[in-house]
Image (cartoon, rainbow, N blue to C red; front, side, top):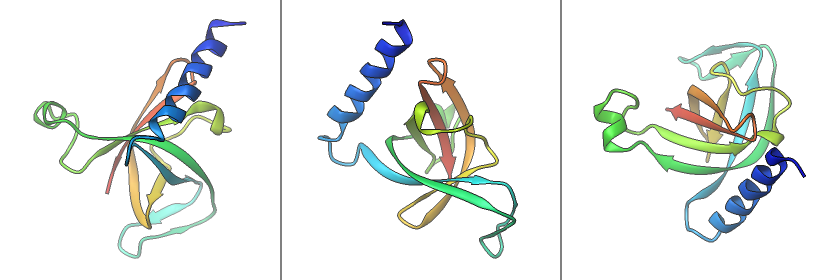
Length: 121
């Protein structure tokens, strides 16, 4: 068994255990945008595909905010890499409970086993 397989199993276990902690795992609607987004009308022209996935969620820390890495209200989502056909992109967006969030930054952690997405309203 390869090292990456062992890490992937550990990530699966972490997600399963986090399900027991209120608010730590949420369902998000992940959209791959291949069109143009109009923030005034909150619509995308062109096509977009979406998938509902689970994500571990965390708020931006005071240190991240004071260091200029994040803004108040930013969220960090950790998602399993195997759920994506391609690498997530800052051109994509997510919907959480009907609210659209732009992807600000994508961190490809552990060779694609997980991705950390920084998102902002």
